[in-house]
Length: 265
Image 1 (spheres, rainbow, N blue to C red):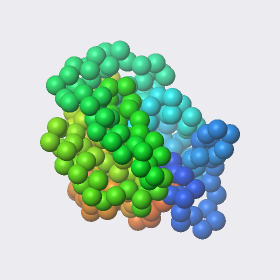
Image 2 (cartoon, rainbow, N blue to C red):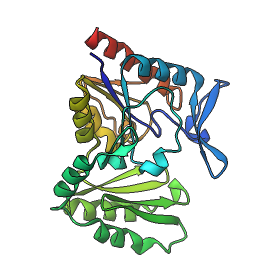
Image 3 (cartoon, rainbow, N blue to C red):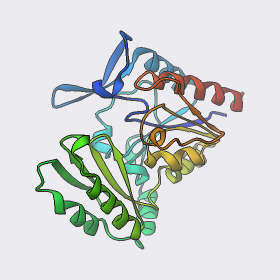
Image 4 (cartoon, rainbow, N blue to C red):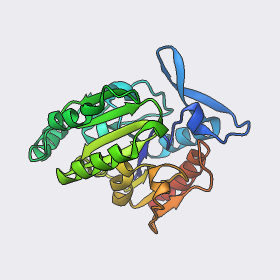
């Protein structure tokens, strides 16, 4: 039996050059390019640890990215499944799972439509601090700011209260503000993959959108940075790295690898 390791990508496994610090001369490798420029990196040790994990267990990348955005990322080893769009899209060998699409559509049928949410968020689209506002299918909405510090706190509070009254949640990750329906869940998608693969679920993530993922797992880990860290999020079964930045991935992969080997040994 193999364990199923559902691993968040951005700010958990992969990092921009800015968010990767402190590195202090640690060897790194670029794992994503965009428009001909390097975008995301991992430490060489994290890449080696991930490759070793993928040879022993099922590694399942989990991300809020669309499948197209996820497709830019180069990870070592096989990944039989991937979870995209915050759990809204399940890929098997790169192909969308139609049954999962239907299940998600049915669950979201009772929620406020994403078209109405994007209209609410787009009210600030012309502000100088806003770079873009986007909608991902009928799944969720996100805003990209010019800088994290430029996002008005009052606007964020008002959006959070408005979204919450309609069953949607707000998550801020760097310059991005995500507005996601509560029933759209990385955790639910990871549980489904674990059922399909027939192994115990382990997980890692850094943001509020990863909370369901960590709470569905038998063992979990988070880095010492990100939304969950800022909130002081702790649970007995959730390991917290001692180091922030890209080196946190080394600790997380080492810990989850040991736990996966133990539970399947």
